[in-house]
Image (tube, rainbow over all chains, first blue to last red; front, side, top):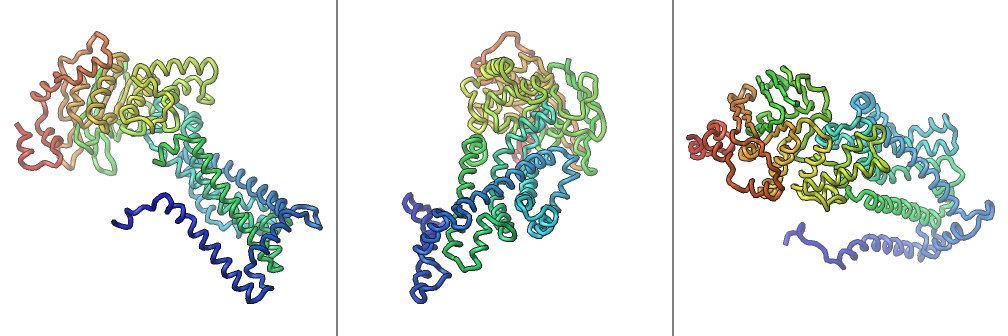
Length: 272
Length: 287
């Protein structure tokens, strides 16, 4: 049989999915064991025990200086920035994307500008933000907004333009005003698509968050990683990276489940 | 009441003439079927009737007044696809015109007004044979049921003119016969003026009170009306028919077949019934 027609069985599917994860873990610990056998003081590839000790120190015991559980407080700070930034970006994108996608005059006015603006590298703007709004929370949240909103706006404009023309004619013949079409036809159909755009923006959002925290912050996951880097503390950095990855993965999964539950018609229509 | 008057209409795209010298007086309450080969511009003509396009030349009047510049509630439409909203249930789709009308600001009814609209919508659903499907989404309906829904939704807007753009072309013959019966019944009940575009000649004869043939006679010129056939002996029956009876009627050999034999325009039948015309078939098409 041709290779494109061969499908793994039930058990084989699970094994195949787990395989690369297992391979990565095995490769890491093999390398770690070899290095530690040669030099017990090696810091580059810490053992599982060393990382567990670091996690215990960071997550389950109070910091002597601040009296806080550092992983917890870092996570809280980072999530606050991330979610605030994404919420603002989503709000702006949804309003602008739908308005520009629907109204030809707005499209003519803004599409080229938004396209140009989205090419500005957000990190290059960071110094401007620091100068303009200081190095506080505003700068970090603004960076996430600038980094994610243009993509979501452009995506939504295109999704609105993709709505079948006959559908829009039909609702006009049912007597709908532009405003009613926005409320009852376009907005409800764009919500599940907005979730798709948001899922794709999670990666960039974390990128800009960690960058901003690395450059100027006193707390947060990115701040911590770049702080302990000075001491070659790979035993802290690696669990932090794994934790960030897990958080991002959970957000993505939650959004996917929410999309399926809240918009059953969307799956029926587009995911058959 | 809702007559359409098309006067010397031309449509030209980038110097290419699509329609030329189209003139047509459509009487109120008639069912006009526009037939012609694919790409002849009959859909373009229908798009002009729904104000989705404007003619390059000529005028179109609805009850003596020029057509508005945009689609309006006096002209309902049903397309072959995308005629219903995927994110609303069957009931939601049917109620939508009432909600647009009843709530200018939100497009959404609440409380007693909502219950009234729902009752009206449910009556319409029963009328078109969609009762029991209220809470399904369009993607869960068969093609025939989707088009029933599209018809019912268009009628909820109480249009004076109904424009049908190949609405039944994607359906299988059995489903098509059923929905023909429904369409005819709804037309008889409402007294609407209907303009239907189709490439199916038997469908045109089965439903129409008048058949208008669009045809491009010379390749470098636009499409014109080449035949305009009143279908005789097809006056509105007075008695009410149930869908089941209608169904039987449409299954019988209908009188339009007799008409078709005598009057089918020969040139057009050769051009359309055998689109990839082998010499033998083309010859056989000519009497």
